[in-house]
Image (cartoon, rainbow, N blue to C red; front, side, top):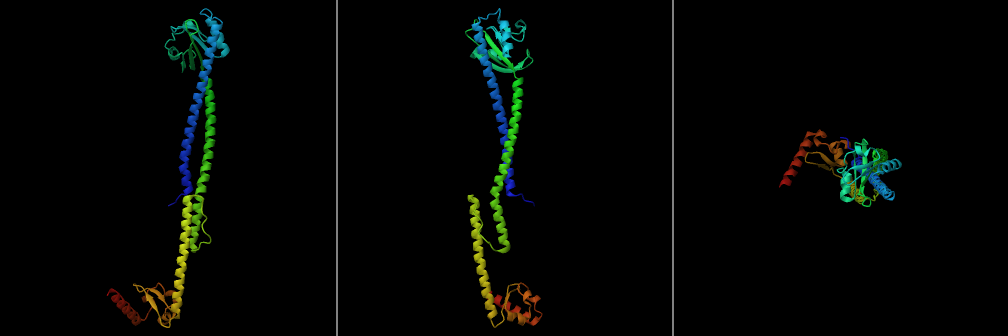
Length: 319
């Protein structure tokens, strides 16, 4: 079974978070930008409507010359201007002949202006045959309190938004790529100490020697692990040293004995044997320890005697 490195798993865990975060960021920025553009357009229309109402008052515009004024205002300001009276009848429009237009009392922006003094909406205009933003202002200083409605097509705004959204997406992708590289780097930095400890541990298992203590990482958890491994290696060295010392002493004791000594386990496998016993039983040293006695001794009487002795020892232990 192939196991993936830890830093790859960490990197993969960051990946969906970064992707979702970038997508959410792009959507939020796009929505914020759209709202900003629309809000800016609405404020611009409000100021234009106020300016038109000012000129209507200043020039004493009435129903007889309102159409000429509206057409000129629409041409100069590059927008549609509509004047509606209190009954919803269009008395001036920069696009069409007012007499050919429907009653506007139920238009959303006019309804809002009736209730609040001003109103705005975005909808499709059958007259202009395009999506437009409307702003209506009810100005009390004008005779008969007519509604001044101005509008601009949203095509240019939408085109600007599309260009801006493309740039936002490109910037978002660049930021996402940088975050991916950064997360890969930090994942690698986080797992590098673990790799170092793994290499040191594998080396220790092979040689049972630790040339130098494992470096202590700055991370608390990894530092605790490194300290524990260093303590374990130190304790293992101490115990191995004790075992080697005991083995050396035992071998010295066995070699100094004048009698033959043979140690067997319950399966009659040789655990330990000195030189005198090896010579007496004619067993090669390389084949002795770990091998069954019956495989090494051809003298059946000697083998039978040893078995009887070991059996008596077992009976004695049971008692």
